[in-house]
Length: 275
Image (tube, rainbow, N blue to C red; front, side, top):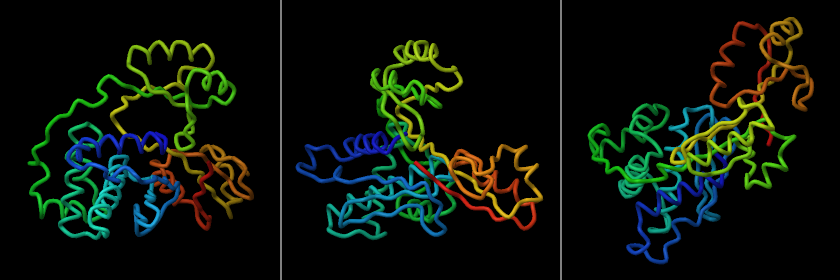
Protein backbone atom coordinates (compact mmCIF):
# COMPACT_ATOMS: atom_id res chain seq x y z
CA UNK A 1 0.00 0.00 0.00
CA UNK A 2 1.26 3.46 -0.87
CA UNK A 3 1.78 6.13 1.78
CA UNK A 4 -1.22 7.96 0.31
CA UNK A 5 -3.56 4.95 0.52
CA UNK A 6 -2.33 4.29 4.06
CA UNK A 7 -3.08 7.91 4.93
CA UNK A 8 -6.58 7.66 3.44
CA UNK A 9 -7.32 4.51 5.45
CA UNK A 10 -6.08 6.14 8.66
CA UNK A 11 -8.34 9.12 7.93
CA UNK A 12 -11.28 6.73 7.56
CA UNK A 13 -10.46 5.29 11.00
CA UNK A 14 -10.32 8.82 12.46
CA UNK A 15 -13.67 9.72 10.88
CA UNK A 16 -15.28 6.68 12.49
CA UNK A 17 -13.65 7.23 15.89
CA UNK A 18 -14.04 11.01 16.01
CA UNK A 19 -17.14 12.06 13.98
CA UNK A 20 -16.89 15.60 12.68
CA UNK A 21 -20.22 16.56 14.26
CA UNK A 22 -18.75 15.78 17.69
CA UNK A 23 -15.37 17.36 16.95
CA UNK A 24 -16.06 20.29 14.57
CA UNK A 25 -13.12 22.06 12.95
CA UNK A 26 -10.65 19.50 14.28
CA UNK A 27 -7.18 19.06 12.79
CA UNK A 28 -7.01 15.32 13.42
CA UNK A 29 -6.37 14.47 9.76
CA UNK A 30 -3.76 17.19 9.24
CA UNK A 31 -0.68 14.99 9.38
CA UNK A 32 1.84 13.44 7.01
CA UNK A 33 3.10 9.86 6.76
CA UNK A 34 6.69 9.05 5.83
CA UNK A 35 7.31 5.31 5.63
CA UNK A 36 11.04 4.79 5.98
CA UNK A 37 12.40 1.65 4.36
CA UNK A 38 14.92 1.47 7.18
CA UNK A 39 15.59 -0.72 10.21
CA UNK A 40 16.00 0.99 13.60
CA UNK A 41 17.14 -0.67 16.83
CA UNK A 42 15.18 1.25 19.45
CA UNK A 43 12.07 2.75 17.84
CA UNK A 44 9.39 1.65 15.37
CA UNK A 45 7.87 5.06 14.72
CA UNK A 46 7.82 8.68 15.87
CA UNK A 47 5.69 11.80 15.64
CA UNK A 48 6.98 15.35 15.14
CA UNK A 49 4.36 17.82 16.41
CA UNK A 50 6.06 20.90 14.92
CA UNK A 51 5.33 19.72 11.36
CA UNK A 52 2.73 17.01 12.09
CA UNK A 53 4.91 14.34 10.50
CA UNK A 54 4.74 10.62 11.31
CA UNK A 55 7.69 8.38 10.49
CA UNK A 56 7.40 4.59 10.42
CA UNK A 57 10.39 2.21 10.49
CA UNK A 58 11.23 -1.50 10.73
CA UNK A 59 9.11 -2.89 7.92
CA UNK A 60 10.60 -6.32 8.60
CA UNK A 61 8.05 -6.62 11.42
CA UNK A 62 4.71 -8.37 10.83
CA UNK A 63 2.33 -6.18 8.90
CA UNK A 64 -0.22 -5.86 11.70
CA UNK A 65 2.46 -4.74 14.14
CA UNK A 66 3.48 -1.96 11.77
CA UNK A 67 -0.13 -0.80 11.40
CA UNK A 68 -0.59 -0.77 15.19
CA UNK A 69 2.55 1.38 15.44
CA UNK A 70 1.12 3.74 12.83
CA UNK A 71 -2.10 4.09 14.85
CA UNK A 72 0.04 4.72 17.95
CA UNK A 73 1.68 7.67 16.20
CA UNK A 74 -1.67 8.95 14.94
CA UNK A 75 -2.85 8.86 18.56
CA UNK A 76 0.08 11.12 19.48
CA UNK A 77 -1.03 13.54 16.77
CA UNK A 78 -4.64 13.63 18.00
CA UNK A 79 -3.46 13.90 21.60
CA UNK A 80 -1.33 16.89 20.66
CA UNK A 81 -4.24 18.50 18.81
CA UNK A 82 -6.39 18.18 21.93
CA UNK A 83 -3.87 18.98 24.69
CA UNK A 84 -1.02 20.78 22.90
CA UNK A 85 1.25 18.03 24.19
CA UNK A 86 1.49 14.25 24.10
CA UNK A 87 3.06 11.63 26.32
CA UNK A 88 2.29 8.03 27.31
CA UNK A 89 -0.23 8.89 30.00
CA UNK A 90 -3.66 7.29 30.39
CA UNK A 91 -5.11 10.16 28.33
CA UNK A 92 -2.92 9.16 25.40
CA UNK A 93 -3.86 5.51 25.75
CA UNK A 94 -7.57 6.40 25.78
CA UNK A 95 -7.09 7.93 22.33
CA UNK A 96 -4.99 5.01 21.13
CA UNK A 97 -7.56 2.52 22.46
CA UNK A 98 -10.39 4.25 20.61
CA UNK A 99 -8.43 4.17 17.35
CA UNK A 100 -7.57 0.50 17.85
CA UNK A 101 -11.09 -0.74 18.59
CA UNK A 102 -12.37 1.30 15.63
CA UNK A 103 -9.72 -0.13 13.30
CA UNK A 104 -10.45 -3.67 14.52
CA UNK A 105 -14.16 -3.16 13.90
CA UNK A 106 -13.40 -1.93 10.39
CA UNK A 107 -11.23 -4.99 9.67
CA UNK A 108 -8.07 -2.91 9.29
CA UNK A 109 -6.21 -4.82 12.06
CA UNK A 110 -7.02 -7.66 14.49
CA UNK A 111 -6.70 -8.23 18.22
CA UNK A 112 -3.90 -10.69 17.46
CA UNK A 113 -1.88 -7.87 15.92
CA UNK A 114 -1.81 -6.23 19.36
CA UNK A 115 -1.45 -9.42 21.40
CA UNK A 116 1.55 -10.74 19.45
CA UNK A 117 3.59 -7.51 19.39
CA UNK A 118 6.25 -8.17 22.04
CA UNK A 119 8.73 -5.53 20.95
CA UNK A 120 6.95 -2.63 22.68
CA UNK A 121 4.97 -1.96 25.87
CA UNK A 122 1.61 -1.04 24.33
CA UNK A 123 -0.08 -4.34 25.22
CA UNK A 124 0.93 -3.93 28.87
CA UNK A 125 -0.56 -0.44 29.21
CA UNK A 126 -3.65 -1.14 27.13
CA UNK A 127 -4.53 -4.12 29.32
CA UNK A 128 -3.80 -2.14 32.48
CA UNK A 129 -6.27 0.57 31.49
CA UNK A 130 -8.85 -1.34 29.43
CA UNK A 131 -8.65 -4.97 30.50
CA UNK A 132 -7.87 -8.21 28.68
CA UNK A 133 -7.61 -7.47 24.97
CA UNK A 134 -9.31 -10.78 24.16
CA UNK A 135 -12.38 -9.50 26.06
CA UNK A 136 -12.64 -6.12 24.34
CA UNK A 137 -16.13 -5.53 22.96
CA UNK A 138 -15.70 -4.72 19.26
CA UNK A 139 -18.54 -3.48 17.09
CA UNK A 140 -18.27 -4.63 13.48
CA UNK A 141 -18.31 -1.73 11.03
CA UNK A 142 -19.16 -1.98 7.34
CA UNK A 143 -15.99 -0.70 5.71
CA UNK A 144 -14.98 -1.37 2.10
CA UNK A 145 -16.24 -4.94 2.20
CA UNK A 146 -16.72 -4.90 -1.58
CA UNK A 147 -13.70 -2.79 -2.48
CA UNK A 148 -10.39 -4.23 -3.69
CA UNK A 149 -6.93 -3.14 -4.78
CA UNK A 150 -5.45 -4.59 -7.93
CA UNK A 151 -1.65 -4.42 -7.95
CA UNK A 152 0.53 -4.96 -11.00
CA UNK A 153 4.21 -5.79 -10.43
CA UNK A 154 7.21 -5.95 -12.79
CA UNK A 155 5.24 -3.74 -15.15
CA UNK A 156 7.60 -1.01 -16.39
CA UNK A 157 6.98 -1.97 -20.03
CA UNK A 158 3.22 -1.35 -19.69
CA UNK A 159 3.28 1.56 -17.26
CA UNK A 160 1.75 3.98 -19.76
CA UNK A 161 -1.17 1.64 -20.39
CA UNK A 162 -1.72 1.26 -16.64
CA UNK A 163 -1.47 5.00 -16.08
CA UNK A 164 -4.07 5.61 -18.76
CA UNK A 165 -6.39 3.16 -16.99
CA UNK A 166 -6.17 5.12 -13.72
CA UNK A 167 -3.42 3.25 -11.89
CA UNK A 168 -1.10 5.06 -9.48
CA UNK A 169 2.47 3.97 -8.87
CA UNK A 170 3.38 2.99 -5.31
CA UNK A 171 7.12 3.26 -4.74
CA UNK A 172 6.66 1.37 -1.47
CA UNK A 173 4.93 -1.61 -3.11
CA UNK A 174 6.95 -1.15 -6.31
CA UNK A 175 3.69 -1.79 -8.14
CA UNK A 176 0.96 0.06 -10.03
CA UNK A 177 -2.23 0.13 -7.94
CA UNK A 178 -5.92 0.81 -8.57
CA UNK A 179 -8.98 0.48 -6.32
CA UNK A 180 -12.26 -1.00 -7.59
CA UNK A 181 -15.03 -3.44 -6.64
CA UNK A 182 -14.47 -7.19 -6.88
CA UNK A 183 -16.27 -7.76 -10.18
CA UNK A 184 -14.40 -4.88 -11.80
CA UNK A 185 -11.11 -6.22 -10.39
CA UNK A 186 -11.62 -9.63 -11.97
CA UNK A 187 -12.46 -8.04 -15.31
CA UNK A 188 -9.46 -5.72 -15.00
CA UNK A 189 -7.21 -8.67 -14.27
CA UNK A 190 -8.31 -10.30 -17.53
CA UNK A 191 -7.46 -7.12 -19.44
CA UNK A 192 -4.06 -6.59 -17.84
CA UNK A 193 -3.12 -10.28 -18.19
CA UNK A 194 -3.12 -9.73 -21.96
CA UNK A 195 -0.06 -7.51 -21.48
CA UNK A 196 1.79 -9.17 -18.61
CA UNK A 197 2.07 -12.56 -16.91
CA UNK A 198 -0.80 -13.23 -14.53
CA UNK A 199 1.62 -14.04 -11.69
CA UNK A 200 2.47 -10.32 -11.59
CA UNK A 201 -1.14 -9.31 -10.87
CA UNK A 202 -2.51 -9.40 -7.33
CA UNK A 203 -5.97 -8.58 -5.97
CA UNK A 204 -6.37 -7.63 -2.28
CA UNK A 205 -9.30 -6.45 -0.20
CA UNK A 206 -9.10 -2.70 0.32
CA UNK A 207 -10.10 -2.67 3.99
CA UNK A 208 -6.78 -4.21 4.98
CA UNK A 209 -3.53 -2.27 5.13
CA UNK A 210 -0.46 -4.05 3.84
CA UNK A 211 2.79 -2.14 4.06
CA UNK A 212 4.62 -4.11 1.40
CA UNK A 213 8.14 -2.96 0.67
CA UNK A 214 11.52 -4.25 -0.44
CA UNK A 215 15.05 -4.24 0.91
CA UNK A 216 18.32 -4.85 -0.90
CA UNK A 217 20.41 -7.30 1.12
CA UNK A 218 24.09 -6.58 0.41
CA UNK A 219 26.92 -8.99 1.19
CA UNK A 220 30.60 -8.08 0.90
CA UNK A 221 33.95 -9.57 1.97
CA UNK A 222 32.59 -12.84 0.61
CA UNK A 223 34.83 -14.06 -2.26
CA UNK A 224 34.92 -17.61 -0.89
CA UNK A 225 31.13 -17.77 -0.85
CA UNK A 226 30.20 -16.29 -4.21
CA UNK A 227 28.96 -19.63 -5.60
CA UNK A 228 26.59 -20.04 -2.66
CA UNK A 229 25.35 -16.45 -2.98
CA UNK A 230 24.75 -16.82 -6.70
CA UNK A 231 22.80 -20.02 -6.17
CA UNK A 232 20.64 -18.24 -3.59
CA UNK A 233 19.58 -15.35 -5.79
CA UNK A 234 22.31 -12.78 -5.14
CA UNK A 235 23.80 -10.77 -8.01
CA UNK A 236 27.22 -9.10 -8.08
CA UNK A 237 26.74 -5.30 -8.14
CA UNK A 238 23.03 -5.95 -8.52
CA UNK A 239 20.36 -3.23 -8.60
CA UNK A 240 22.93 -0.47 -8.96
CA UNK A 241 24.76 -1.31 -5.73
CA UNK A 242 28.55 -1.34 -5.84
CA UNK A 243 31.12 -3.92 -4.66
CA UNK A 244 28.57 -6.28 -3.13
CA UNK A 245 26.44 -9.31 -3.83
CA UNK A 246 22.86 -8.06 -3.72
CA UNK A 247 19.45 -9.71 -3.38
CA UNK A 248 16.11 -7.92 -3.55
CA UNK A 249 13.83 -9.27 -0.81
CA UNK A 250 10.43 -8.45 0.69
CA UNK A 251 11.19 -6.47 3.85
CA UNK A 252 9.30 -8.95 6.05
CA UNK A 253 11.66 -11.76 4.99
CA UNK A 254 14.74 -9.89 6.23
CA UNK A 255 15.21 -11.94 9.41
CA UNK A 256 14.94 -15.30 7.63
CA UNK A 257 17.31 -14.17 4.86
CA UNK A 258 19.86 -12.92 7.39
CA UNK A 259 19.62 -16.24 9.24
CA UNK A 260 20.65 -18.11 6.08
CA UNK A 261 23.85 -16.05 5.93
CA UNK A 262 24.95 -16.82 9.48
CA UNK A 263 26.83 -19.94 8.36
CA UNK A 264 29.09 -17.88 6.08
CA UNK A 265 32.11 -16.76 8.13
CA UNK A 266 33.69 -13.29 7.97
CA UNK A 267 31.17 -11.76 5.59
CA UNK A 268 29.75 -8.26 5.96
CA UNK A 269 26.00 -7.84 5.61
CA UNK A 270 24.11 -4.57 5.21
CA UNK A 271 20.60 -3.56 4.24
CA UNK A 272 19.95 -0.89 1.65
CA UNK A 273 16.78 0.61 0.29
CA UNK A 274 16.04 2.57 -2.80
CA UNK A 275 12.82 3.98 -4.19
